[in-house]
Image (cartoon, rainbow, N blue to C red; front, top):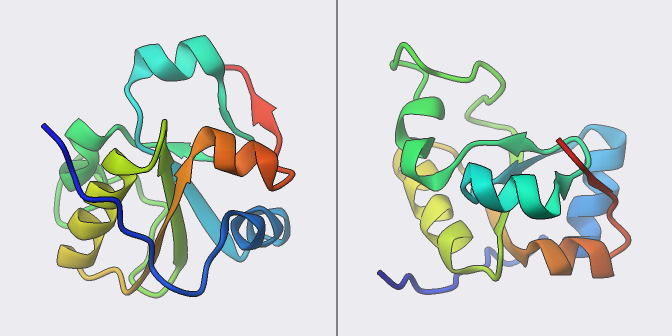
Length: 118
């Protein structure tokens, strides 16, 4: 399954890195557990796999992660940007209005972001 890469204008990977450091941006890794185990994730990122994002990001669902609010700034990434583009669409449908696709983990690293192993 292929998804169109989308990027909301206004948040670059560098802006996501800076915003995450100050606590103004919530970074979401939408890759599956195996990918995260192999390569780590952006330091401080929430790991909300795309296949479970609908439930984990929905405040009405019993599995809601509890860390997102409709007005928070969110930066999503995956391996290359395709799945994070789909994640942006899901989050926007759930009512999150400030969501960006920053591409892949490599974009985060090239922008100066750190990676942590879990």
